[in-house]
Image 1 (cartoon, helix red, strand yellow):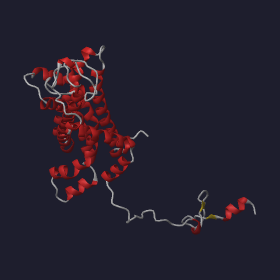
Image 2 (cartoon, helix red, strand yellow):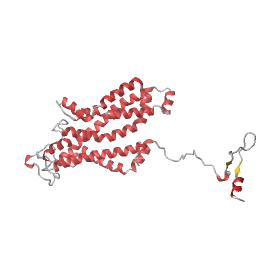
Image 3 (cartoon, helix red, strand yellow):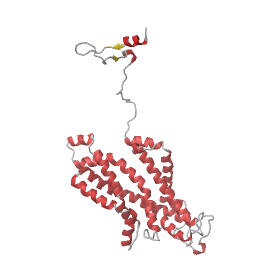
Image 4 (cartoon, one colour):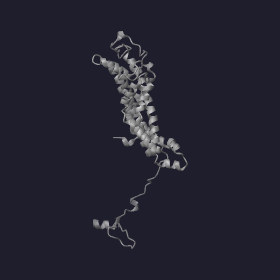
Length: 331
């Protein structure tokens, strides 16, 4: 028997309503024994319960970037909370007779132009820079989420007004706006003043992300079901929509924290940030620029501490972004 004949015998006839086979309607149909059925919708009930945060934590634990960044951040936070563990010197105690002396026992980084211990000032500067970064990020997330969430949820004229309000502040560069405001109010300087100024010009990006996330989330089925059960709009926003939109906001806040630390250092470098009595990396970098050619080590240590801290939070932000937003992964 030829191959053509074998194919013809394995062909099943498909008949029309009159019982005849129309041209082109022949179909090859395999026997049932050759195509066993499988449970495509089965569920493994023995598997542990999972959600977005559990899956994100599992992804983070396997990410070397997260491990390295986490170790660095834990160490930086420990230095900021307990500087006395690393040095027993007073960061504001200076002796001119030790001006620009090289490092020695108990003073590994040497002294600056005023005779202050560089190692001690670098350690105590961690608390200032980290406080500004964390407090600014917290306020930016609160303000941005509130404005963006209300705009995206209610829509209409509320969305139009809040969106235009956001656009006005977004048109002002954060660092330039902070310089102008700090120049206008130079009567007193404190950490809270820097935090409030950076928050004033830094909440816009978070607001835009929160608005887009709420617009996407409020049209999902669970919000419609909650409304059908009698839940009020405000309750839906607080109990359902915002918790399901917080992943993108956390990603933005984590990646932006490093930029706020850099902004504080820049303002202190320009002489309009924290007062000279407050130990900060930006202030020490500003004081060391005059002796950059003769003694660059005085500038190197606070700059290295600033760079490592910012790098740690940037790496943490990238790891969190990959875990909470898999669609943004590049590899």
